[in-house]
Every structure is written in structure tokens, then in C-alpha cells.
Image 1 (cartoon, one colour):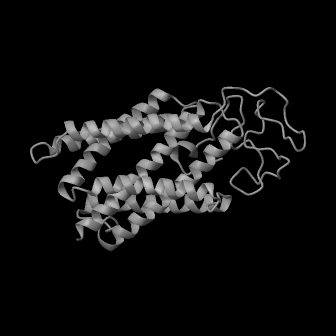
Image 2: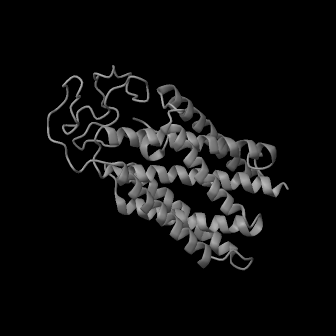
Length: 296
């Protein structure tokens, strides 16, 4: 299975590790696989070659090997995600306290934040191209991402609105809870068409943001105006909706990994992906609220 999340987009949960990746599907009793994309309705087990996958109790099909204890569970995903997000929160709070953003220190603090963001980007790319999850890299990414978020949040809170950070955090939590509830109720169905739409929308959104950044750097001002005024509000809403769609794709990936017996170590990859998505939503929420309150 491919996900919108950069961590999942290059490969499935497992590659060359004795389990079938999400692209190594075979037809199952539940219906034929459709291409290579298990988001499509009626697809089979994405861990079709997993020797530890439970047998189909309806047909008797499937391996009869005893169940293994080292398979991923929801508890594993929750605990790893809590550790990763906890690292982000702790380092964000520390950077807020230790890196002041007053007029005398804002340049230095902002430089450290940009440096931390670049390190976090490099670490995320390193993990994305690793054959297996590396907890140390994931936690290091979370730590540097937290430094960046702490300084940026402090700047926004100091110079735009003192309460905007709390509102952005609450908004992010509401988006997460809402998407999770809708996914569990099956109001959101992750199909191949849904996946393709989200990926196309995300690509267009990112290209527009890059173009806006380039125009602002070389042309001065606010670039194409995608981050201020009416257009800024519109694109902020679109960014949050895309983040919600990413969450749905991530929930589907986690659900399939748990159902079909992904190795326990892959829970770190799930936690990493969920953290990336929540950081995306928080930043878009912070940007949107900053524009709204700045226009008051």
C-alpha cells in the first residue's frame, strides 16, 4: 500500500524482510487484487506471503504456521506514537523557554529554528530510504522538529496573537479525533480513487507553495499571495483538509499492517508517519489562525 505520507510513499510497511510489502499482492478469497493498489475495494491481503498470517477460517486457505508474538498491534502503534509526539512536545517547550524571540534574540533563535528544520528534513529523508525503521533516527527527527515548532510557535504567539498556539493545538487534536471517528464509522472509505485524488491534490498544493516561496524570495513581498488575505485563508483550509486526508490514509495503512501481521518494528514507521501528518496539520492550522487573527 502506498500512502500520501512521505515515509510511506516509497515503499510499503516492510520490504525484503520476510513479509510481503504492500506492492506484493496476490489474489485472495476476499476478492482479486486490483493492480498494485490495495486501496481499491476487494483487494487481497497485502501481506499475502507472510508465513505467519492466520489462515482464512472460512475457506481453510492460508498457512498453518503458529502465530508469532512479534507482530504489530494497535498498542504498539499508540505507544510509539506517544513517544515520538512526546519528544516533539518536550523539545518544543524547551526551545520556547530557552530560545527567546525578543528583538535582541529573535535573529539567533530563528536561525537555530531553521537549522533544526533542515536537520529534521534530512533525518526524515534518511528514514524514508532506510530498509527498516530506525528508532534513534525517528526520535532524533522528532527532537529537531520540536525545536523548530517551539520557536515558530513562540514567534507567532508573541507577535500575532498570544492564544493562537493553544487554538492550533486544540484544532489539530479535533481534526485527528474527527478523522479517526469518521474512519472507524466507515464514513471515510480509503479506496484507490480516494488515494489518487489526495495524491494529485497534495502534489498541486505543494507545487503552488513552492512557487509562492520562490516568488517571495526573489520578488519580495508575499509572493503570489497564497499565504495572506483571502487566498491565504483558502489555502490554509485546503492544507488542513489535505492533512485530514493524509490521516485517513495513514489509519488505513496502520489497520492493514495490524490485520495482516506486519512485524512489530513497523509500529515505529507508523508512529513516524502519523507524527509527520500531525505536524503538517498543526502548521497549517497555526498559519490559518494567524491569518484570521491578523486580519481582525
